[in-house]
Length: 410
Image 1 (tube, rainbow, N blue to C red):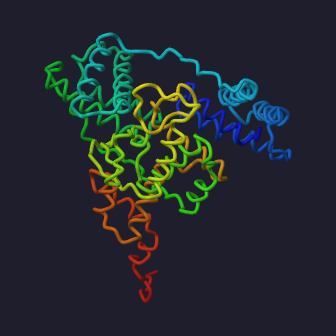
Image 2: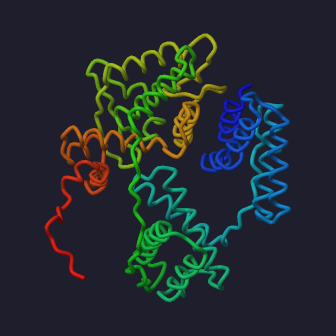
Image 3: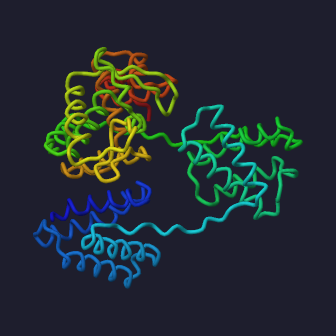
């Protein structure tokens, strides 16, 4: 088998066996990609155990020369061992589920009750609820480790010490900002319920967050990725439809994974859905090319003589391996796009969200207003759409001031 194809299959196996997509792709970028490069050095594109061993020897030399830490060395060598095993068995070993420390029963019950209440009131997705629990449980565990076994003595000084602890631990501005929002809502709710007598007053501080201008995907790259997909297979039909849907409509990967058969209005030529992130109801155009791609997959790829779809499964996009059910993690949709990008010869840095930026850029260059772009992309806040103005390089050049004729003072 081709080494590049085997490396991508290994990454997909990691995700399907319980690894987080971010972990799987980190392993690809830091280990499997270098294994592929070693094969290229040996002038072969077929899997070679000798080339893998050569890469492992190079890792050992780096560790002996003290170029890498022991923990990073163990990660690299461990990943190589798992890859060798995958090449033989076709299965990447499941991650070891380590025991995560939990706060006491009191804190655990409080955090779970609040998470359920907030999720119901604000219509949170499971991912948002999980992030909230992770944030609050980490805070409660810190309280317990510092001698606070309930919430009776928590005040602004304690909250301040916790944020100082996060800063000392190297947390970035975005993490601090999210933690601030979750804890502020938590303590306000606890105060309203009279579980605490005093509302901590340390949530007014400003958190600077670095905002990066992320580039869109060039149309030529998207065209090449789509052109190289083998649409004679069920998997190819599915992947083609997913990527085309994201590129043309700007749908988020969470909405693509949750798309149901009833959401496609063939007669009206529209796709109707409630966006997972915002809860907003949206109508998106069912263009001719999207319609053909969806029809090809649903009629010839999603259901055929080989695939046995579970009863009552109404999700449009299903896994290509047994038990052929829907995707429980929306990041798996993004992984499909990353895999196809790599096969087309591009890096995996541009995720599926970059296709939304491309659509926003193209609409802006075509003369659409920011309000129209916001409507198509499903932004509740127009400020979320204004980031696409920074992508219009030519437009920004026209706005630049001409300093010719202005004397520079010395």
